[in-house]
Image: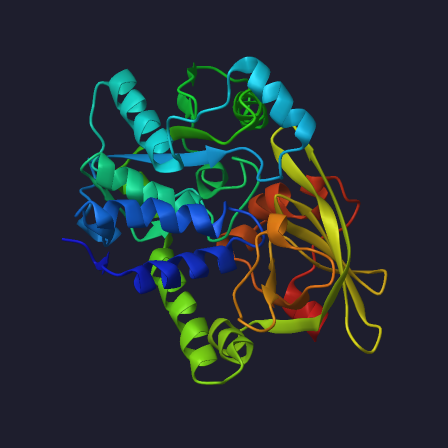
Length: 374
């Protein structure tokens, strides 16, 4: 029996808004996440999540995930897509994941009992739940990251040295592949991203064919429920005429880093990642610059090293309290920047090694946000 069932559009929107909050600028779009879940509800199919404790230790579990960039398509890219016949997608995100899961089950000759979201984000976690509904199984209340991340090794299965391969893939146009070998996780990530980039789109992929026991040992527990509650809290505070940011930072033990306007946006799309930086400035001239690779990872306050991953940097709409994905941020927007502590597992050395600033090429040591804030 599902621990939580999403029955209405309002519940879906609250949940997805919470996912986008923890998506730290990435994790897929809000619109696609809502669409994935509402398609199931409108078809009379129940969606939600279960307590991980209900999954038998000897059951098989699979982690499906979307790979690719959410960067806007340029006219040149659209023209090139047309030359390849990439004009009419036949699979939505949920369907890509469902097909990748089925392909992985066929390789192993065994059915999975549940799916595990790889991360928190508007599309990735929502599409995972929808894919489990399509395949007649369930999604657990938890994920493998506790936020959104750009690279597959930035997950708890890597930290705990679990099995990744093989990875099965299906893109929006029906192209399918299987990655059966890679010399390390970084290479598996690179191959997977190139598969997505080949079709100029996200690709649905599936891996981590783990036992229920393994899954429960490495899961960031309770994050689906947490996202639903945070999304609901933001809406209820806004509707009550209150400042939702005050309630959120109190609930999460976070910090409001800045309230101001986006004064500069820089971005480019390369090999399946959306790269760039946003600069936000308040009325006093205080300036925060946040560098992103899909998600927000490194920041500077008035030019000085500031908050970084694995801690979370969230940019939200000052009026509504709802978080932005980086592709939707534009110059002139009124935004609030929030900082939240990373999940404990990513504050250990192996987590810092893959998600700290040095993992992104910056010659900076990670400093916990609470030490920065004093």
